[in-house]
Length: 95
Image 1 (cartoon, rainbow, N blue to C red):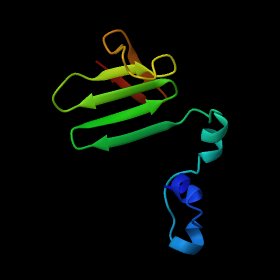
Image 2 (cartoon, rainbow, N blue to C red):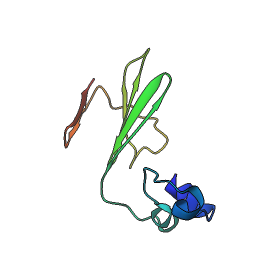
Image 3 (cartoon, rainbow, N blue to C red):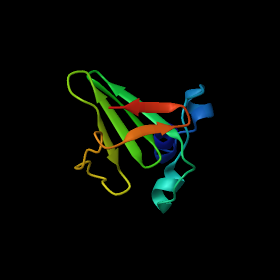
């Protein structure tokens, strides 16, 4: 949300008068810089995903988990879930 507010020229503290979770990452997007490795997590009604560094793990309610190295497979065509164990800084998923 802070990135969208930055793009919309919304001053979060003045205009919204609230504190939002998140970080403005527009400068990294615009310059193609890489931030320090951090964990990203999101959830939809039928799946959840975790992104850590170059790895993206997707777990579904009704089918096996998928694991992608998005640094070399940005379109998520090569599922390596059967070949890898995703484990780093307390995040672990084995398929």
